[in-house]
Length: 80
Image 1 (spheres, one colour):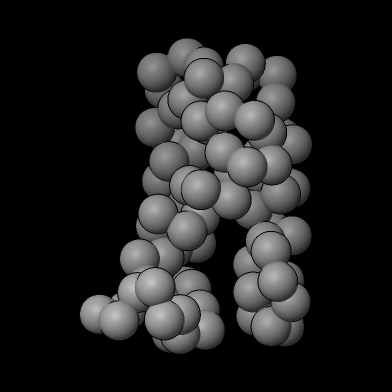
Image 2 (tube, rainbow, N blue to C red):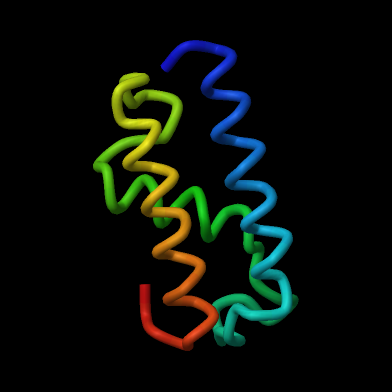
């Protein structure tokens, strides 16, 4: 992914992490609380098979759509 687009996508992922801070359900594996930024990055990696920065520019729209889908799922309490 091009550096400028990579920064833009990461900014959107961080913004989603900010919005999910109080939405993510507690998990026994994270007694001090869950890291929403790591959660978003991990979900993207799981969905696309590699880190967002390793994806081609052409998938930026698909990543953005997935981020919206992920937010809807998390807000509705659906497992991602």
